[in-house]
Image 1 (cartoon, rainbow, N blue to C red):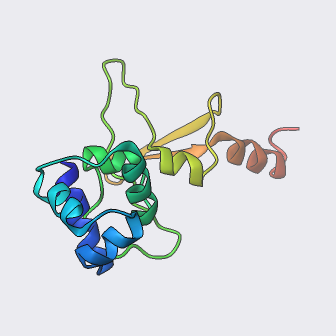
Image 2: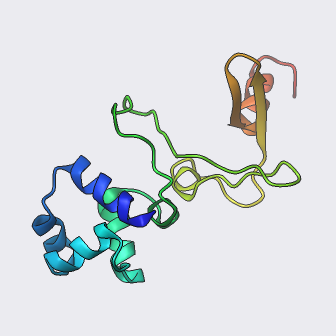
Length: 137
């Protein structure tokens, strides 16, 4: 729920309601109502919140943000969860697509280990590796 996400991330960043409200250009009372679930931010305020929290709008709205108990190591990311569709399709979170420059039509290699899970890699990595090993020319 968006109210819980706003509250959780505001506290994680160490902002008071007053400080975050000032950054957003709204009153502290407005922010309080959002956190209590009494009202919802408009699309412009939601966009500003997502930018301040460094998450996507989808993550803000759906509350699909990782637990912030431990800060990931530099270069390591937690993008939240995805839902597997009827035919096995998944939607890669927008923030991950942007960070890794994944665009429509890109081909990804799916690797799996029964103990470690699944991994997605750009298939160009394997083509380049095979070319360097002389397997592909």
